[in-house]
Image (tube, rainbow, N blue to C red; front, side):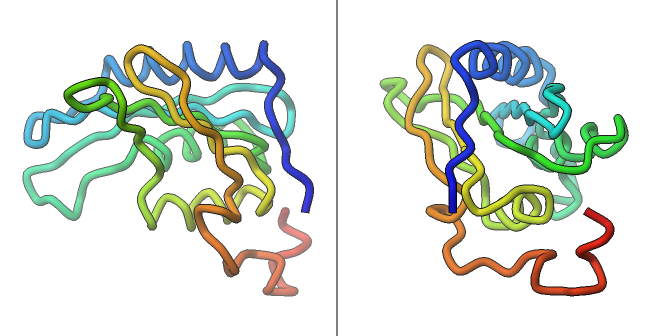
Length: 149
């Protein structure tokens, strides 16, 4: 499994897109704004923000919104994602994708895909998708979907 790290230029572009998306997040209940940006197979960046709903399970995570934007633009594969969340009281905490988003990322990304965390002030740790979702189940397990990707 090879790690697919974004270049420094791509990482900076991902950060700017994710932070811009974070500012537009709709989070009136938790007040926890999240932005995400996905680098697709064509080198394009797609951003998304979280969108809460009074019926809590009906909300949308920033990572899912960014993936939807990628698919809408014709992207087929995600090569990297950067997630920006509020850094806690001391800007020392990192937001990683929730379990559901880890699986959504796996649908479009390889286990070696880079997942970069950031907060309001800093770029933080980077993980592979396999570190966040070990022994994952993905489209490659289903022969019928291999041609679709």
